[in-house]
Length: 166
Image (cartoon, rainbow, N blue to C red):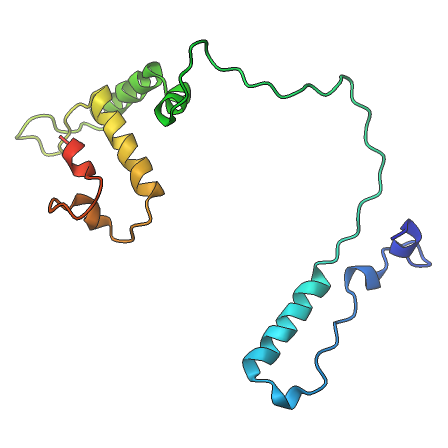
Protein backbone atom coordinates (compact mmCIF):
# COMPACT_ATOMS: atom_id res chain seq x y z
CA UNK A 1 0.00 0.00 0.00
CA UNK A 2 1.51 3.28 -1.12
CA UNK A 3 1.25 6.64 0.62
CA UNK A 4 -0.95 7.94 -2.21
CA UNK A 5 -3.46 5.16 -1.47
CA UNK A 6 -3.83 6.40 2.12
CA UNK A 7 -4.69 9.98 1.14
CA UNK A 8 -7.62 11.33 -0.87
CA UNK A 9 -7.46 14.20 -3.38
CA UNK A 10 -7.72 16.83 -0.62
CA UNK A 11 -4.74 15.36 1.23
CA UNK A 12 -6.83 13.90 4.07
CA UNK A 13 -6.76 10.27 5.14
CA UNK A 14 -8.92 8.22 2.82
CA UNK A 15 -12.05 7.01 4.64
CA UNK A 16 -12.05 3.82 2.58
CA UNK A 17 -8.75 2.82 4.21
CA UNK A 18 -9.96 3.44 7.76
CA UNK A 19 -13.48 2.07 7.22
CA UNK A 20 -13.46 -0.39 4.33
CA UNK A 21 -16.70 -1.77 2.97
CA UNK A 22 -18.15 -4.69 4.91
CA UNK A 23 -17.38 -8.19 3.75
CA UNK A 24 -20.41 -9.58 1.94
CA UNK A 25 -22.17 -12.37 3.80
CA UNK A 26 -23.41 -15.70 2.45
CA UNK A 27 -26.10 -15.64 -0.24
CA UNK A 28 -28.26 -18.37 1.30
CA UNK A 29 -29.17 -16.73 4.61
CA UNK A 30 -32.33 -18.78 5.07
CA UNK A 31 -30.36 -21.97 5.80
CA UNK A 32 -28.28 -20.34 8.58
CA UNK A 33 -29.27 -20.08 12.23
CA UNK A 34 -29.47 -16.74 13.99
CA UNK A 35 -26.25 -17.53 15.89
CA UNK A 36 -24.39 -18.33 12.65
CA UNK A 37 -25.59 -15.07 11.08
CA UNK A 38 -24.58 -13.11 14.18
CA UNK A 39 -21.13 -14.73 14.26
CA UNK A 40 -20.65 -14.09 10.54
CA UNK A 41 -21.51 -10.41 10.94
CA UNK A 42 -19.29 -10.13 13.98
CA UNK A 43 -16.42 -11.78 12.09
CA UNK A 44 -16.90 -9.41 9.16
CA UNK A 45 -16.97 -6.41 11.50
CA UNK A 46 -13.77 -7.50 13.23
CA UNK A 47 -11.98 -8.12 9.93
CA UNK A 48 -13.04 -4.78 8.48
CA UNK A 49 -11.94 -2.83 11.54
CA UNK A 50 -8.61 -4.67 11.86
CA UNK A 51 -7.03 -3.20 8.74
CA UNK A 52 -4.30 -0.85 9.89
CA UNK A 53 -1.97 0.73 7.34
CA UNK A 54 1.72 0.11 7.83
CA UNK A 55 3.43 3.31 8.96
CA UNK A 56 5.92 4.75 6.52
CA UNK A 57 8.69 6.70 8.19
CA UNK A 58 12.44 6.80 8.40
CA UNK A 59 13.82 5.56 11.69
CA UNK A 60 15.87 8.03 13.67
CA UNK A 61 19.60 7.39 13.63
CA UNK A 62 20.99 5.77 16.78
CA UNK A 63 23.66 7.62 18.72
CA UNK A 64 25.32 4.33 19.72
CA UNK A 65 25.42 0.83 18.34
CA UNK A 66 22.87 -1.70 19.59
CA UNK A 67 24.28 -3.53 22.59
CA UNK A 68 23.94 -7.30 22.63
CA UNK A 69 21.92 -8.85 25.44
CA UNK A 70 24.05 -10.14 28.29
CA UNK A 71 22.70 -11.86 31.38
CA UNK A 72 24.71 -10.78 34.43
CA UNK A 73 24.16 -13.06 37.41
CA UNK A 74 26.21 -13.11 40.62
CA UNK A 75 29.27 -15.35 40.71
CA UNK A 76 28.45 -18.88 41.87
CA UNK A 77 24.73 -18.39 41.22
CA UNK A 78 22.87 -21.71 41.44
CA UNK A 79 19.74 -21.35 39.31
CA UNK A 80 16.53 -22.26 41.15
CA UNK A 81 13.15 -20.54 41.52
CA UNK A 82 14.05 -19.44 45.06
CA UNK A 83 17.44 -18.11 43.94
CA UNK A 84 15.83 -15.98 41.22
CA UNK A 85 13.24 -14.73 43.72
CA UNK A 86 16.01 -13.75 46.16
CA UNK A 87 17.69 -11.68 43.42
CA UNK A 88 14.75 -9.28 43.70
CA UNK A 89 13.66 -9.80 47.33
CA UNK A 90 16.86 -9.88 49.33
CA UNK A 91 17.02 -10.20 53.12
CA UNK A 92 17.54 -6.43 53.30
CA UNK A 93 14.28 -5.88 51.38
CA UNK A 94 12.45 -8.24 53.74
CA UNK A 95 13.92 -6.39 56.74
CA UNK A 96 12.66 -3.08 55.34
CA UNK A 97 9.18 -4.57 54.77
CA UNK A 98 9.10 -6.03 58.29
CA UNK A 99 10.28 -2.77 59.84
CA UNK A 100 7.74 -0.67 57.95
CA UNK A 101 4.87 -3.12 58.59
CA UNK A 102 5.50 -3.05 62.32
CA UNK A 103 5.99 0.73 62.26
CA UNK A 104 2.71 1.21 60.37
CA UNK A 105 0.84 -0.89 62.96
CA UNK A 106 2.38 1.22 65.71
CA UNK A 107 1.38 4.51 64.05
CA UNK A 108 -2.19 3.21 63.70
CA UNK A 109 -2.19 2.42 67.44
CA UNK A 110 -2.69 -1.28 66.84
CA UNK A 111 -3.35 -3.15 70.02
CA UNK A 112 -0.45 -5.18 71.33
CA UNK A 113 -2.00 -5.93 74.70
CA UNK A 114 -5.12 -7.83 75.57
CA UNK A 115 -7.18 -4.89 76.84
CA UNK A 116 -6.66 -2.25 74.15
CA UNK A 117 -9.60 -1.03 72.10
CA UNK A 118 -7.92 -1.06 68.66
CA UNK A 119 -7.27 -3.95 66.30
CA UNK A 120 -4.92 -6.64 67.62
CA UNK A 121 -1.38 -6.71 66.20
CA UNK A 122 1.56 -8.96 66.90
CA UNK A 123 4.86 -7.68 65.49
CA UNK A 124 6.00 -9.79 62.55
CA UNK A 125 9.46 -11.07 61.69
CA UNK A 126 11.23 -11.94 58.44
CA UNK A 127 10.09 -15.58 58.56
CA UNK A 128 6.39 -14.71 58.93
CA UNK A 129 6.60 -12.20 56.09
CA UNK A 130 8.34 -14.68 53.79
CA UNK A 131 5.66 -17.32 54.58
CA UNK A 132 2.95 -14.77 53.81
CA UNK A 133 4.62 -13.81 50.50
CA UNK A 134 5.01 -17.48 49.60
CA UNK A 135 1.32 -18.07 50.28
CA UNK A 136 0.39 -15.10 48.08
CA UNK A 137 2.44 -16.51 45.22
CA UNK A 138 1.20 -20.08 45.77
CA UNK A 139 -2.47 -19.05 45.84
CA UNK A 140 -1.98 -16.60 42.96
CA UNK A 141 -0.47 -19.26 40.71
CA UNK A 142 -2.92 -21.98 41.72
CA UNK A 143 -6.02 -22.79 39.71
CA UNK A 144 -8.15 -23.58 42.74
CA UNK A 145 -11.40 -21.61 42.76
CA UNK A 146 -12.27 -22.48 46.37
CA UNK A 147 -10.05 -20.43 48.69
CA UNK A 148 -11.06 -22.51 51.71
CA UNK A 149 -9.58 -25.68 50.20
CA UNK A 150 -6.09 -24.25 50.71
CA UNK A 151 -6.63 -24.73 54.44
CA UNK A 152 -7.86 -28.36 54.36
CA UNK A 153 -6.02 -30.64 56.76
CA UNK A 154 -7.46 -33.99 55.63
CA UNK A 155 -4.68 -34.74 53.14
CA UNK A 156 -6.62 -34.25 49.90
CA UNK A 157 -4.30 -31.53 48.65
CA UNK A 158 -0.70 -32.13 47.60
CA UNK A 159 0.73 -29.04 49.27
CA UNK A 160 -0.60 -27.90 52.60
CA UNK A 161 0.42 -24.28 53.14
CA UNK A 162 -1.52 -24.10 56.38
CA UNK A 163 1.25 -26.13 58.03
CA UNK A 164 3.65 -23.18 57.62
CA UNK A 165 1.37 -20.62 59.25
CA UNK A 166 2.09 -19.84 62.91
